[in-house]
Image 1 (cartoon, one colour):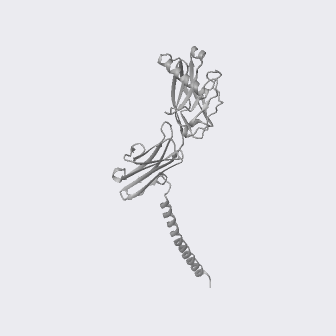
Image 2 (cartoon, rainbow, N blue to C red):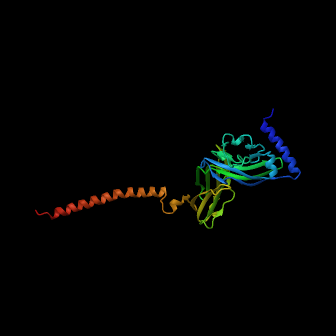
Length: 301
């Protein structure tokens, strides 16, 4: 035998469809409130609120059901019928504070969903659907719960003297990112590189993206700034890495180009210093010997 709440829900749905078919829709959702963007693990909870208005007939007859849906799933993730405790299902089971109260109005007490410990898996579109004896209304809003990249690296190699292979690796990010390569003689005149080889993988709820481009020197400025840019859709999150490339030479990081010596330069400096040290010792020894000879020649007999 079906549970009372389930039977009640079916009856309300049939009544709402009949009322809607007859043109009587007296429930109206005015706002759906929730954060648009949330950084993963940054908040203890988030609230999804569905503000609606009921006319006098709906309030008198009651017959109210509030449901929340995630993305395009036909099954609700939350349901509340006045007179019954709220319920969480599927994705939100175990992640909702079922005692959360948003209003003193007995027909609006548990209309909102308080998600506890939201994760990236709960990112997506949420639809609030309010059904009464007289009608039905629904509204949808998107919430993105994003995870910043755990790692981002831009590197390069020389498969041939006049070619460079550029690789940008982004690890542990959500949602699926956009990763682009740019090149130019400066930041102002850069162009987006085309024909990239892109590899994407999914593990432990996050994306890893590897982007590669094999380019010939003749397609690049003599002194090229190569940049990898990572962006996440529907957020302001953006990260970038840059390297410098000179025709026919191995690319260098911008730090080494603008004043900080590269490792090879440091090695040459150490070798030069080591080679100069024996010469200095030899010159000092010769000077000491000549000084002693001079002193002896001046001594009285």
